Length: 280
Length: 272
Image (cartoon, rainbow over all chains, first blue to last red; front, side, top):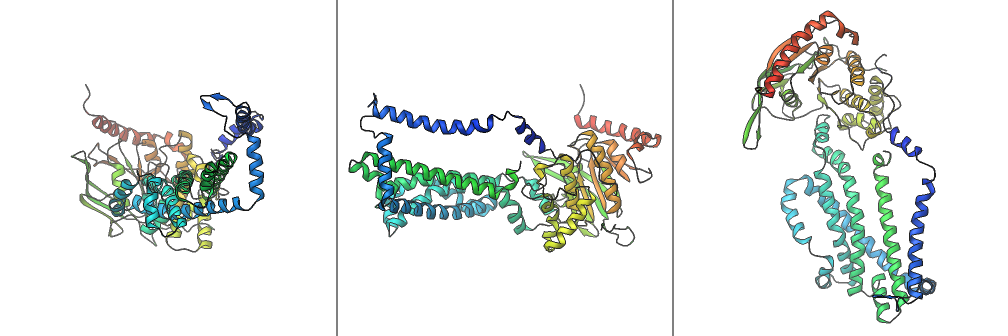
C-alpha cells in the first residue's frame, strides 16, 4: 500500500522533551536542594528569634524554640492521646471531603450541562457560597445530633463550593467542536455526557479538589477550635488555655504536614486520572 | 486485512440532494443569510469540493448535511432520508483540534464502533485496519497531544471512515497544515478514498486543492452562498501531485481563479 507518506511522522511532542534534556544537568539537584534549604532557613530563623528573645514589635519572648517543640513532639508521639486527636481530624477530613467531592462533582456536572439544573440549583449555591463555613458553626451544632456530624458538615461545606464551581467551569469550558465530533460519530446524549463532558471537565475538577482540600482543612480546624472535644484543632486551642506553648506549635506543624500530604495525594490522583496531560 | 472498497454498483449509498437550501442566523438582532437557494446533487462515491471565499457559507452547507444546523428553507436529503440530526453515516473531519485529547489514537478511532456497541476485540482490530490505511501503525497508544498536526488529521480521517459512512464531510481538513504536509495529505486522502469509496464533500478555499482532489468543484458566490459554477474535473485517476503542472489543470485553474477572485472582491465590499 502506498498511502503512508514518509517524512512527517516524527511526533511533535518530542520537541519539549528534547529541550528539557538540553538544560544543564546542574538543574537536576539544584531545585530540590533549594527547596530543602528554604525550609531549613525558616527553622534557623525561628531558632535565632526565639533563643535571642527578639523583640521587633513582633515579640518572640513567649514563643517556644524549635528544640523545645521537638522535645514536646517526641513526648506527644510517644503517648496515645495525640494519635486519637490526629485520627479524629483525619476521619472528619476524609468523610467531609468525600461527601463534598461526591456532591460537588455530581451537582457541578448537572448544573454545567443541563439548563434546568443550572436554573434551579445555581442561584441557591451563589446565595450560600459567600457565607464562610465558620459562620455555620452555631447553626450546625443545632442541626446535627453529634459533635462529629456537625464538624463533618462544616468541613464538607468548605470543600463543596470550590469543587462545585470548578466542575461547572470545567463543563462550560468544553470545546463544542468535540461535542459535534462525537455526535457525528454516532454518540447519543448519554454517551456525550460520559465520553466528552466528564473527561473534558476533569482537569478543572481536579483543580477544584485541590482548592477544596485546602479549604476543608481550614474549616475543620476552625470548627474544632470552636466546638470540638477532639481533633488537632481542639488540641491546639486547649494547649493555649493550659499554657503549654510548645504544644501549640506541634499542633500547628502537624496541621501543616497533614494538609501538605493531602494536597500531594490529590495531585497524585489527578496525574493518575489524566495520563494525557502527564505525557505532554 | 484491508477494508472492503464500497463499490458504487453494489451499494449505491452516499447520494446527497441539497435543494434550494437557505440558512439564516440571527446575529445581534440582525438576520444574516449565510446560504440562499443552494442546490447540489452528488452521485454515490463522488468527490465534490465546495470552493469559495471565506465567509461564503460553504461550511454552513457542510454543517447542514452533518445535521449540526437546520435549514431555514429548502431541504437536505441523504440517501432518501431528510437530515434531521447528526449521525455516524455522515462523519465530519474538522479543520483541527477535534480529536478527544483524553483518548489514545486507538480510543479515538474506536469511538464510533463503541457507540454502535461493537465488542472490544472487534473494534480494536477494525480500528487498527484503518490506522494502517492512513499510515499510523505504531501510534495506537499515543495521545493526540503527542502527534503532529498532519498525524492528527489522519486520525480524524480514520475515525470517520471506520464507521463506513455514506458521506464523509471534510471542513478544510488540511487548512491548518504547512504547504508540504498539505500536499502529502492530499495524496494520502486520494489513496485512502480509492480503498474506501465513499461520497466526499470537501470544503476548501484552495483552488489547487479542490481541482486536484475532486470529481466536481462547486464554485460558490460571496455571501449569501450560492453555486456560481460547477466545474467537472476530468483529470485521470489515480492523480499524482505532478498533475497540477499539466495544461489541462492550468486551464481549469484559470477558469476557476477568475471566478473566485471576483467573489472574493465582492465579499470584501466595494473598493475605494
